[in-house]
Length: 299
Image (cartoon, rainbow, N blue to C red; front, side):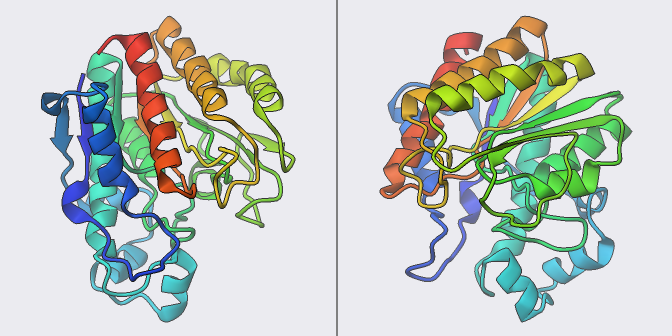
């Protein structure tokens, strides 16, 4: 099985910026050090074509990103200042998601050690998300790869409002988001299935809610599952407001991935959000997702 990473295009963020851009490089190092992946299983992601990105995004917005013509207000909404390498990084993020999804269709499982940019909308970015990688993948899979149905399982602590806004009217895509009820975004879009959890929900409540709602995904009978495995439900996450343990997150991943494996559903993973202090806790949680995947799929 093959997996993808994007470390050739790190964001050049100013000191003190709250987005932990170092987590991508730290995760790759952790996976290799723990023996969860071998170096020959990792491939550098390449940038997506603009024509692919424009499947999910308005051409004018894409052009403004590419030519560094976004307004100051647009940059503030995204959360990244000018001069960070944001545009290239965004294209590589989408490219890695496309490569991982194609690999998943071939082998049953793949992942990108980045991505899950689910707050990007059709004509604007938001919440550290410039282009929506899963929306581009879903639409490309339906238009170019001969698939009939794609499901998104979004378990980041923040609702996937961009996924819902871009894909919500497409009957070939099922968007499931389970997230913190009172967390960002404060104006949520309607997914096919939204499960909102109260502040402080812990392992038992979280896993019970997930088990009660996953059947709706399987009933959709997807040809491909895109799994947004954000680890910001972790209790120590600065932006999370839920109270999951590392063991609870691993149980979550086990529930999703084992169900996909039993049904023979190809699944492509993105790491999603993680903002723990220290960031090593988020990295450990991301590595836990890969540990569960390795146990289930044996790569």
